[in-house]
Image (cartoon, rainbow, N blue to C red; front, top):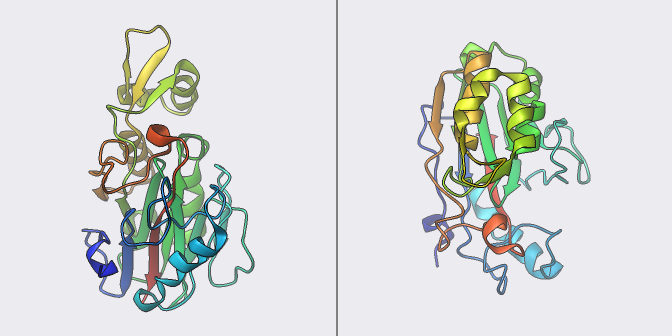
Length: 245
């Protein structure tokens, strides 16, 4: 299998020197339930196989990605100077060839770049990180006017599959009352369907970022293409990559 045929290439108005790609679960060497292109070293998969999967990326990007230890927070690291495995949930770069990556299996990966092609960023927006401000923190570290930025939203759990409790709804509404529109009540008391893409769009719009693309792939329902933690429990992790070429 040609790995290039398994990738998703973001459809957004980014400058030509901004390079990005989204992996799927296809094209790797991991056995079930991590089948097959799993990049996560923390999910129980064979470490040697994961390393082999990561090596498959070499022909498609200029350097080894800055793999993060993601903790559902809002710490942002700079790929231009990062070493080891930083504990963070977002990454930026201003230097050509430094690759930012976010791993997900339902959480929302958010890619950002400026219209001049001078800085890129990637944020891991699970509901906790999104609520606590990981997008806002990433935009701040990018250091350009937010009106100059654009965003692409990668595969995430869709609004018909993401069930949450009143605590999640209340946490978002404490930040902004308009978040209520992203929650649909269920028959069970205190339960809601949450639209994480809509919540991310609200946060981006509040920053002045209106050029927003993506957000159309559902990890939960598209089992043949994506890993989903909510669906399967034990599963792999996909990668969302961005760099300056």
